[in-house]
Length: 380
Image (cartoon, rainbow, N blue to C red; front, side):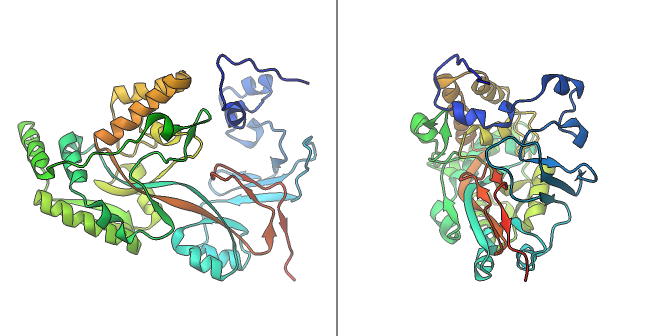
């Protein structure tokens, strides 16, 4: 068979678009028969890939998905492994030890585990797709005030903030990386830099913010808490922030270090005031990050609720070419100019595989993993 695709406009991103899940072919009759529940369980999926979900006890939604090699696969390269088991939920407390003892074969690790992984001859693959930055919970009335947000960010000494950043992090002053593409073009080259201009006089800006808050009957608390990751680098960074903000405001800012899973859980639930937060991004498109902050997004951790911002994203989704890029530029500019987010650094994402495992193919941007050619040397 030959598939012919007619485009409404010229684009360099067609091949990339065809790799996305939305472009995958599906049997129309079967899809309609699932009545909107396609993909929600084993019997509601139809596939033609190298693997399929194992029939008996292949999927426990809270614990695991077990795949087996498909005998019906028509691709050029049949899968080598008989099956792949994905587990989640009850994760080993020490993932490095679990890899060494071959309790597991592959997992994601973080920067503070790298040295241990290398010392134990584990195979490591790196990609960059997590932006760390300062953000406010704008459900808190005081943080709805733009002048307050700008004065706080404007008072920070960026050089001192980033002095203790580990080598595994890449400092950045922009929300969208210089390497991100959109429709086959370099996004940063197309829209230019979007950087928060430091307040000329953060103290004067803060005084104006106080006036506006007082006029609206909003009183600043005597203290606020910044949640952050419980590592040395984050602790030192937050200490610098606290010194700058205590001096600016006369309020008392304190820190609450948390394990990564608890930090992310607190962000998702909105149970925080200020956070040093990890935000997943994509090197393939600025949309991955910017779309998080539309009003109805489950990932809108800052609780932004601004119809014009939603419209920027909707325009980018519905338009093409320069219209879409302009809309994304407006969205990014809004987050930056009104100080909703303060970018700090990019964290590389690390995947470690056991020393007896080879053939795992990782996307260079961390967008996917190919297990079809994996081999595993049995223990002697």
